[in-house]
Length: 233
Image (cartoon, rainbow, N blue to C red; front, top):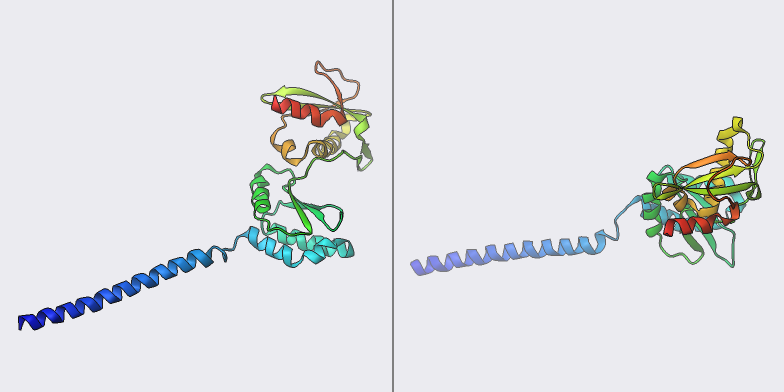
């Protein structure tokens, strides 16, 4: 009798053990499946944007065909990643365009630009760039004011560990200071790029061309060189 009971208990134990092992195996398979496929299916605003971009790249690459529609759709898609993101297209060069992702100079949006850039998949027709790059400054106009690089000189002055910019402007009018400041800011952004302009520059002061300074004045086209020398010394 006792022997029969022992066999009965052993059978139940085996069945219970088998059920436990089955649950464990299913759990392991579920975890493995999630780790293998869940990450691939992970949806982030950045990944969603690039899927949209890749699907619509023909329209975007040929945006000149309907600039307003292409830019509106692109701005809408970008705003789902961050409302302050902006963009620029480069010219078609041997079947490849630059696509610049910009924070519009807003420091708080910089991490989003980096995240979006780093998550970009390779696309043969596109060269993705994070932040507006350095360019040869071009004349800028707003209302009745036109600023040309040849009409500017600049002197760098220490502002803590950063360089402060004293910008001397020909025909400067103090009554239109805000307009001049906006145009000068854009000119500086062209010269040293969006990232350096936002993260590595101290004060920016506009002065008439006739004002004196104790710091050495330079032609505006010398700015990239003297700026790099200052921040790397």
